[in-house]
Image (tube, rainbow, N blue to C red; front, side, top):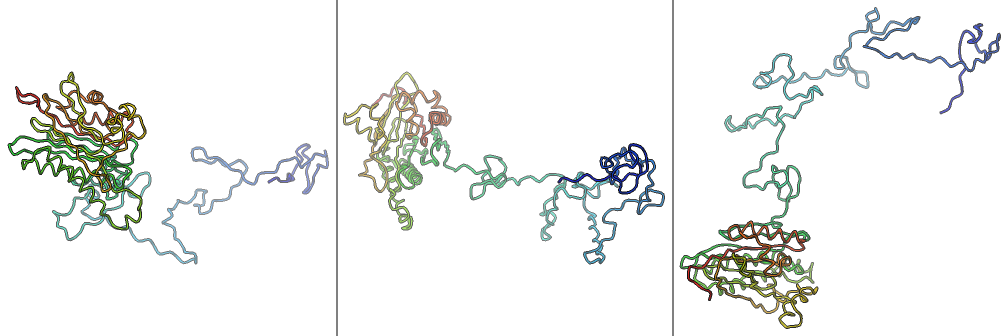
Length: 467
C-alpha cells in the first residue's frame, strides 16, 4: 500500500543548522525544504555478535525488567517451573510426577549416572523411540513368558510359520487370505499362473503366458507300476476352451479325473490303450458335472456355453507308448539321436485339420486361415458325440515324448521345429527342458497359456526291434 511522505521532526535545519520550530515545513533562514528529510526510525535493531549486544553511545537504556538491578537479566525459567492459570485465572493443578522405573529393568540398572536412558532419541529428548510393549500375561509362568527384546532394537516383521505362504516380493511377510502380503502389501501371483511339477522322470510346466489374464491350462503327471512290476509313466494335459464358461475349472477337473483313472487302472492290468480310452471318458464325465451349478448362476449368464476343454495324454512303459486325445492339443516324439527324424503322433480335432484331410487346402493354407484353430472335438456337456482318439506305438530307440497345448506348438508347429527348440539333454533333465520350451513360447509372444509335459522313453532291451 502506498503512503504519503511524512514530515521530519528535527531540531535543526539540515542545511544551515538554524533552530527550527515544531510544524515548520521550510527553514526560515535558508528556505530548505524539510519534507525531504527522512523520518527517524522507531526502533534500532542490533545484530548480536558472539552473544554480545553493544549499546549505542549516548543512549540511556532503562533497567531490564526482572533483572538483578545491575542490568543483568534474571535466570531463565523452564515453562514447567512457572505457575500456570486457566482461562479464569485459577492456578492449574501441578503435573503428576513421572512414574519410577521398576528396579528390575536391566537397561535402567546398567545405565551410569548422568547418562540418557535407553530408547530415547537425542534429537528429540523425552520422546521414546518405541511405545512400550504390552505387559506380560500374569497367568504365564516365567518359562512360558517371552523374553523382553532390547529397547533400542527396531521391530522386525514376524516370520511366517513354515506352513504359511511367504511373500514373493519381500520374502518375509505372511500372505493373507485375500492374496496380499501383510508386511509390504504386495499382491501375490495366483497359484495357477505358473506351475511346475516333477514325478520321477516326468516333468511338466504350465504358464499363464503374456496376454491372458489367467491360466486355463492344467496338467496331471504321475508314475505307477504294472502288475509285472514294470514302471509306467502317465501325463495328461488339458486346455480350457476360452469361449466357454469356467474353462479353468474344466481343464482342472478333466486332468485330475483322467490322471486318477489311469493311475488306478494300470496297476490292475488294464491294457494302456484301453486305460487311456477309459480315462478320457472319466474326464468327460467330470467336465459334464460342472454344469450342475446353482440356478442363480445360470440366470445371471443364460447365454454362456457349458464348461469345456481339450485333452491329450500319454502313457509310457518299457516298450510301449500310448497316446490319447480330444481336441487340438498334441503329442510329439523327439528321438535322443537327433539324426533320426522326429514325428507328430496326434491329429487335431480342428477346422484346419478337416480341410487338409478333405483335400480342400494344404496344411500351410489351412493353418493360415483365421478359422484354423476352431476345434471340432472337445470335452463338455454341449460337445458333439464324443470320439476319444487313442493310438499305440513301439519306438525302437530312446527319446522324449512331448505332450503340449497349442500355446507351445503355435511357436514350434512342425516336429522338426519342436525338436530344434528342445535341449539335447531333455531325457536327463526333463524339468529344465520343459522350462526351456515354455520360455520358447514366451519369447515368441506368449499369446496363449503354455503347458508342456515331457516323458523320457527308455531304450528297448538289446536285440528288440520295432513292431
